[in-house]
Length: 120
Image 1 (cartoon, rainbow, N blue to C red):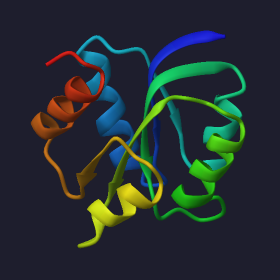
Image 2: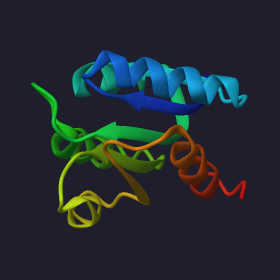
Image 3: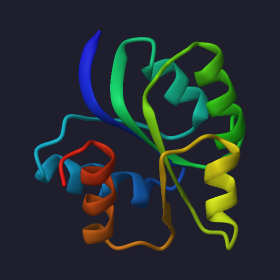
């Protein structure tokens, strides 16, 4: 297994690139995936401590991704990233440890990551 701190999964390439770039600048080892299916494939070779997960994606969405993740008994923490007024409920629905409401700023991103990884 390749050690990775964070797996970022988002079908919006601009968000994917901005989030992963920012995390790398802060010293994190980052893997990326553009959808849930690619995210599951990445998990075949990595074991991230945290998964930043978009909920609304074509194909395997955030709900299906977390269902498969749990079935595989992968214990990574999850923080969902999505634009909805029900983000807390969605986070609870999938057992996420945290969430980021889109649009979020990069300072908020780092704060959530540090909190979830026990660094703050």
